[in-house]
Image: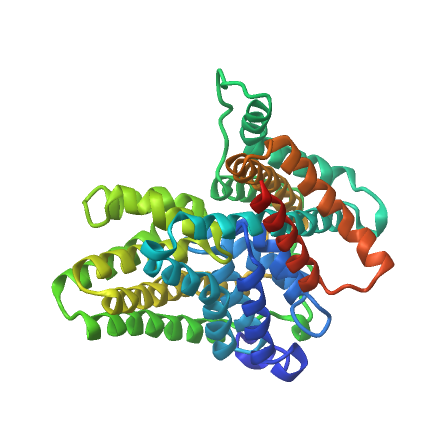
Amino acid sequence: MSSDASSSPAPERRGGRWHHVLSMSKVGVIGFGGGSALIPVVEKELVHPTRLREGEFVQDTVIANITPGALPVKIAALAGTQLSGKTAAVGGALAVAVPGTAATVALLAMFSVLGAGAISVIEYAALGISAFILYLLAHYVMKVLAPGGRLQLLPLAIAILAFLLTGAGKTLALGHDLADLEPAWMLPELSALGLVLVALSGIAIVSLWQLLRGPRRAAATDPSHAPAGARRALTGVLVFLLVCVAGFGVALAMSPDGDTASLLGLILVSTVSSFGGGEAYVGVADGFFVVPGLVDSATFYGQIVPVANALPGPILVKIAAGVAYAVGAETGSVIVGVALAAGAFLIAVGVCSALALMLLAGYDRARDSVFVHNISTYILPVICGLLASTSVSLLHASGRIAEGAGMPPAVAIAGSIVLAASVPFIHRVAKVPDILLIVAFGALSLGVLSIL
C-alpha cells in the first residue's frame, strides 16, 4: 500500500482545515481539566462519518498517550494531519492551546492588580463547567462499554482493572477528605503513561500468543479508510520543527542573549521529558526552573500553577508559557515576558506535536498488523478506566474549590454529579446547545460560591 498522502481521502470530504481549527479552538475554550479529561471533548468534536473515523481517533489517542508533551495538542496535530494535512495540523495544535495560554499570561501580567480573587472567580466557574466534563466522560465510557445499550463484560473488566490501577488511591483520598480523616496509608497508583505502557505490553503478549497459535495478519485496511500516509506525517514533523524554530526567533528577537536561549532550551527539554501530561509537568518544571532558581517557588506554586489549573486547555503549555513570562518580566519588562511566553508556547506545541507525528509515520505502516488490530480492540476499555480515574480527580478538585469558598465538599461533589446527570434529561426535553449548558453551569457555580 502506498504511504503517500494520495491514499488519504480528499480534504473536502473530511471537514476542511478551518473547520478543524475552529473545532480545536472550541475545545481550547471549554476544555477544563486538561489531559485525559479532554479525550471525550475532542472526540465529540472530531469523530464523525465525514471527518475523523473512530479507528483513527483510537490511534491518535494511543500515540498521544505514549509520547511526551501536552495530550490535547498532540491529538489536534495528529487529527489535523489525517483530516487535511500540515495546515490543519499546525492550526489545530495552536488553536487548542491559545485560549488558555493567552489567558494565563494575561492573568499573570495583571496579577498585582487583580490579586488572588481573579483565580477564585475562574475556579468557581470551573466547578460548574467540570460537571459538564463529567457528563462527557461518563457518556464516552458508556458508549465504549455498552454499545447499543448492551454492557460488554470483557471491556468492563478491563476498564475496572485500569481504574483500580490508576484511581484506587485517588478514590481512597477523596473518601478520607469527605470523612475529614487523615489517611493512614496510600495506595500505589500507575500514571497515565504507566497504564498505557502496561496495556500495550499486555496487548503485545496477546498478539504474540495469537501468532504462535497460527501466524496470520489482521484483515487489510480499506485504502479509502487509511489514515494519513507516512510522507504527510513526516512533512508535518518538519513543519512543527519550524514552529519550534519560530519560537526561538520570537523570543530572541526581543531578548537576544544567552540567558534567553538557555531558558528556551530548558522549555524544549522539559517538554520532551514530560510523560504523563500537565500534572506530571508540574514536577518536571519544578526541577528545571524552581530548583535552579530561575523562578521563585512562591511565584511558581502561588501564581503560575494555580492559574494554569484554573483555566481551560493543556496545562503543560500554560505552565511553560507562565514560567517564561515570569522569567522575562522579572529580568526585563512585561513586553519581554510576553515575548518569552510566546516563544515558549510555540516551542512546547511544536516539539510535542513533532514527536507524535514521528510515531504516526511508523504507526501508519503497521496498521494492518495483529498488534495494531488488537490495540484498536482493547485499548479503549483501558482509556475508559483512566477516564473514570480522571472523574475522581475532577470531583476531588471540585470539593477543594468549594471548601475554600465555604461550602462542604460533599455538597459540591453531590451537586456536580446531579448537574452531570441532568444533561441527558435536558437533551431529551429541549435541544439546548452544549455551549449554553456549559455557560449556564459555570454561571450557576460562580453565583452560588460567590454568595457564600
